[in-house]
Length: 468
Image (cartoon, rainbow, N blue to C red; front, side, top):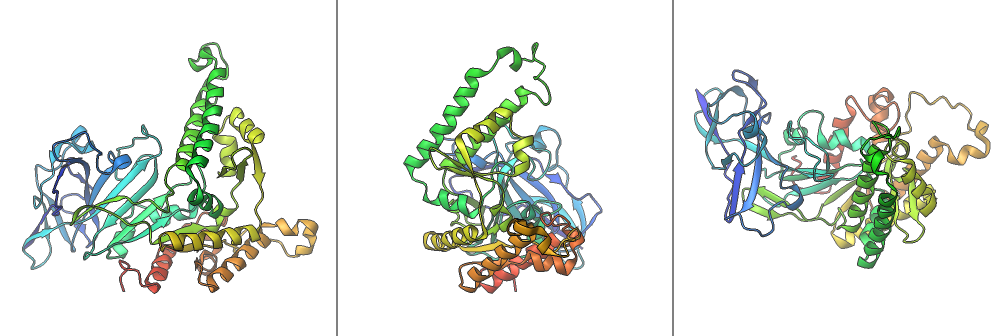
């Protein structure tokens, strides 16, 4: 006895929805589990008649995909004619999307008839327009990637991860992007993850972004454009073409010029556009194309707070990036620009607590969103300090002391109802410091434990989509 699984019903109304050939993630004869991903389509979404008006999904339109899941356990048999290779599997305009088309059969006991495949929509916004990577599901360079599935219907809970590296595996999952969220939580859920590839989002930079006026943004863009223009005038054409210039090459000025321009242009765009805390993006689901509300939960990381921060002397623009990028991703000219036109901002635990409080209050007033904050990890397999008095005056800047003080201030904010602590410190101690040896990059069971803890805290606040 077998079920025939068919494409989901997605009302198109005034849309023209197209798809690629199906890319199978499971083969004929494979035994699959309920809510296991088995294949995906690339999707192209247009307004009906392919008008020249605004295209759905705007800056995500070339990276929208539909991931398909088995509704129950069984043995999979893909049907002929839906898969493909080459361009038909890569691009979303190979076929018109049609509801209820048989895709595969599933041998699963006594069940017969037709059933819709379970599905999840994923969309990615490229870090820059040419950052294409169509080799798989949610691949390529995206500065924001998100997933949505409707579950049993209703308004989805939107959760935004906007921290540093400890969030990558928690939000993106370790295998197929977001599949672990889908497997664990019934929905409706809208899960969004931003990257720290270019800039780091701290409470200070996010707060400034929320408060930025049009005039501030114009001044900021002017400062960046002036620097880029000055650099362009100084370029040597021969060096750019690789002629007679020893600096041109894999580690030379030509490559660094591109990385500088890309980094600074995109940083300026990010600062001038709408804050990611306020963005309303489109969802494709059982109701057709709808506009999501701003995030209900914003997940920050205290690790973001102590990345290097720089303030532009003229405009006050505050930016933050990881310290290692200063040496590996920027040319000497860009580093000189930071030294000349910016000042380094040294932040204390009191600064962090004050700006987290202001961000929580302002965010609650603007959108009603609640702040979840992943704390700092004190457990380390490398910590061998047995007497802190040996540190002398340096004790105030010792990482263990700063981490403990910052975590304590975060606990005080949580006690006042201003935020919720996601206690990575305790989870690391529970699962062992070997799973977080540098206190910044959780591995082993920790990403899943963090995901489950975030879900538990969301359920405690009565948010839908996370199950019982």
